[in-house]
Image 1 (cartoon, rainbow, N blue to C red):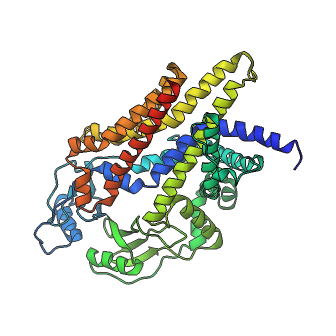
Image 2: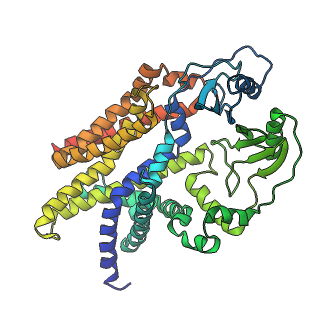
Image 3: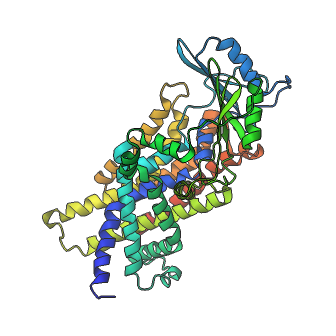
Length: 501
């Protein structure tokens, strides 16, 4: 290797890692949480578990139809969302002259439940959306793509500049200041290196049509994506059997697709669509979209979209999407993704902290008179994008429980709280001494994580013991992870306080 190559790669690794690392910390941490987006959404919805009732000899679908025939007579369409889990409610909606009406019914007897039933929320979908758009629809796609390319550059240059990359995997020296940060950076990077390459590359590959739409537009013109899909699958409607009545259509769809029906759309006078679903805790053994959709006209099956054997280009995209979104993974593999993502976040955080500790101590006035201000801003951005994003995330959970359930647009207010707290964390980091910021923000985050189960009990009457007794492992896991974060962040805050004092 030429003598000049390693210093050049070191320079590129340092500055690419720094400038991309600020956003990447937030992107990686929210991506870590979005691995469990379904359990988070279920916890934040906070729907009470419905008790079993005496059977009325009607299925939930038949009960929903009976209610809609009475309340939604003359509507343009009906929508029925069947219970997603045992003890869950079902949703019915209809569109009439006064707009769309929606409410919850008991699936056992068809009774109308107190409204609102549960809480309107984006839940875990917020973390997923922030992860790939930063809540900036077009600009966010490009920013995330740009820093993702920067991370690939940082990973490649990191491999080049470390002479003892595998030896460093077994070396960790606690309590040694800068060396400890370097060891933590190296160990977390080497341990997750294959995962990091995979997760960043597949994240870029999933949105290739967003980053490079021109070939599709050239080949298919306007509405290129829909025409591309038509070219892949063909437009000819599938001929299928005729079913007598909506329950028969739903049962036929479940039999044909081997999926549980989750939602039914009835568009009058005679159009029906039945949507299948896949249990998020079970692997979806498909390279494409795992959801099945059956379309009926006058009781006749006219189109059936099912997980199919895709063409080569679509198969490659399906593999990338499944790898990134953990679509194929059961709960065990989701936990492995979660821990690997956490280590990736730790690697990014340690790298930026190490940069500041090393460069600020040996400043060469790279930015002239602005050098002190640059390092002060770097310290603030480090704290805000690492400790601050943790604080904003737990504040999002608190907003879910503290914002009134009946407030219109409450789901948007939860996201606003997340963004405002993150902004407040940055302002706090700019105003407070750098050595105090980390301790204060991590301490507050730890206290809030510790208090989340108590807030849940006070605001909803639900608690960890209730979840465990009812076998609701998903909602129980949310509170257990919150307590684990409280212990880890609290311990880190105490250690930082001792080191600064």
